[in-house]
Amino acid sequence: MKKLSNTSFKIIYFFLLYSSALAQEPFLEIRPYIAPSYEQYPTSQHVDHHHPYSNVADNLFLRFDGIQFTDDVIFPECISGSSCYDGHAGIDYYMPFDTPILAPGSGYVLWASFSAPADPCPGGITPNGDQGTIIIAHGNDYFTVYLHMNPPLNVSVGDNVETGDTLGFTGNTGCAINAHLHFEVRKENWFFDTSEPYAVDPFGWWNESSDPIEEIRGNRSEWLWVSDSLIDDGDNGFQRFKGPDWTYLSSGFNNDCWAAPPTNDPEESRHYAIWVPHLDSAGEYNIEMFFPANVDAVTGAIYEINVKNEDGISNTTNVTVNQNSNPGNFTIITTLDLPAGSKCSVILRDVVHDSSNGANVVFDAIRFTNISTTNISEDTPAHIITDNINIDSVYPNPFNASTTIRYSSLRLGDIYISIIDIAGNHINTIYIANQIPGTHLYKWMGTDYLGHHIPSGIYFLSVESSGTRKTRKILLLK
Image (cartoon, rainbow, N blue to C red; front, top):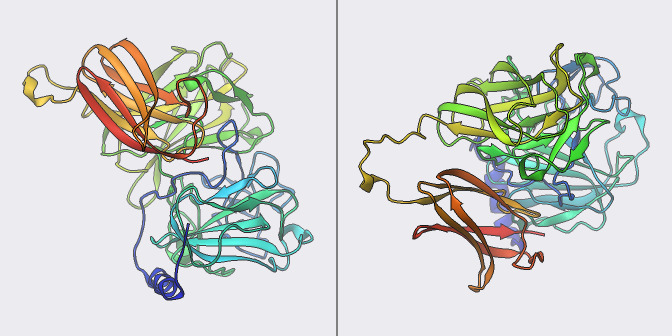
């Protein structure tokens, strides 16, 4: 990270403060922490869309999916798996003490200090000393806030940070009992305002009504995490929320997925997750789910597919799915017309159809395939198709533990996936014999020929077949 001069910092600060730029495209490239071995920590508390920062308890909590709570909404009385913290302005990730907290996108440090926490603390808890706080301006009218940091902070006011830079370490300073990161996004201004808050929800708003947050300052909650059209359970486009009975399984797509016990009663629901793709163009899409084999999956999982219009209001389609169908493969569950960008979400809960059987609701990969553009006519002249191989996406990038390469081939042939460092040294080559035409996925674990994990740095990924080679630059961060 680089230190800005005082003059440069003031220019940037006043530009950001008075900028009228409106950023609707996702810009958060990674989660704001060093990922655990299972790739994501669950979100334990949500933004209250009813009125974030209401220091006076109003006994109504409204979640990002439109579900509201009126009982036990004062921290710490919220029921595990409900996320019903009255007036909460951010999202909380619980994780061990001193977990490195990372910048999820590039920006400038506007605030970095230990100072007095809120008075009074929510729920009447006793503050744990001065609160470690960092605020970053991202140059697009959005500001991210990090609370409860342990000393020392790793950045200072005026620093220029890049995605993946270590900001500091998780703690329980200020109004906190357990170690966790309070991650907050503010739009239009970075100031703390209890009566007319600037807080928005980076997970967006997915309901058949308008976002109540928009009524405060006109700032609508949008999905702000960079994603792709294929979303695995550890990717940036997926988020799992805290529940008491999650099980991590070494099966499914890329040999990992999550499962939770089912219930027929929505009032007893404690486990849910969301997938949000980024679609390059509007069109008719097949929505495909991956179902693992041999996990006693439910026969009546209910997938809620939300499609958002220009007013930020979702049209919801519920699809009941047998998760035992076609195990070990992607299965089309529906076909819908979808808008471009991150305007579509899929929510899956542990609530199943009344007639469902099976012991596990499975949360695995989802793929969105644009069938409006995938078919090539047999009458198309051969010279129009110039490339046999194409890299569709590498995600996540930058990455920490692993990255998934999605590539397409037009003809049967051998595939060579190579990793080369910035000095031109070959790190690894993966050979796949006689691969059939189509779209394929390969998950690289950041290892060399011998299976050793390689150091952080810039690398070049190439995919080659039948004399055609495509290359992408990738960044490994540890």
